[in-house]
Length: 333
Image (tube, rainbow, N blue to C red):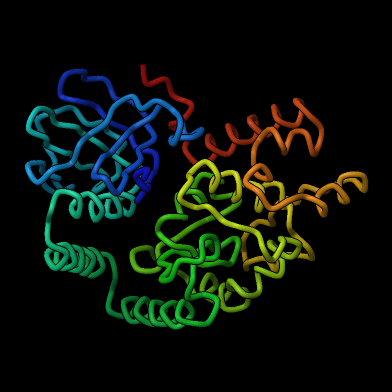
């Protein structure tokens, strides 16, 4: 049985041998391996540039203790770096934000055998310290109230399961789309770019009352009637396949293939661009089957115009990646 992805995302690394920094797409799997790739096309079939085997002999060094003996780029955010020490090599890594490092650290510490109680204690202390340092007593109370409102929302029927894979216990929300998603699916939302899906951690990110109110007026049940309005009832989801999951989420939000009706927009957020279909395309979509081929790039191209559309899709993907990650356009050779 193939190893299942636990967490994935873009980060920048250098090893102990080569001193140049390189942007890579990392995939952590449940067989305790951390693979990295030059792109995000389909890690399930692509050849990895490298694989880090995580054993109890490895050490994951948190941001506060990250090595100062190497030359880190000057524009790294505080708390956005860490490194992994294996018996033979050390990998230095930095992410786009401290929040992303927190998520990586949680999973990596589990893989190297750190007890769950110790991980929870470590991150609770870190979260509290960061929280107190950046907030006054008045704003602290407001932050607690917002967190309580979010906790109530995510317990509601419909919101208590991930909008994408239907697993219980979503811990992230898309402010722009108005849905709650799990840790495993948030990476696919990030790949869409913040102009399509601006995702925030319910526990670790800062929220405003407007953002919370926008989720109250939408949520998973309401958005299902919009983004999955014409999705067949017997549609089978295969989120263990990362390539399939990425294509499904792109089809839902970029093509808006199963959308019906107007989307309630979040306050003070930009509208979502709708890709309309011609009358000739609509009957084809309604008659589509529910197999995995429904989501393949080749099927999409055949369905709405051939190679030109496929090229356009790849162009859009590059533009979204660049918008989400300005460093993606930089040469890391």
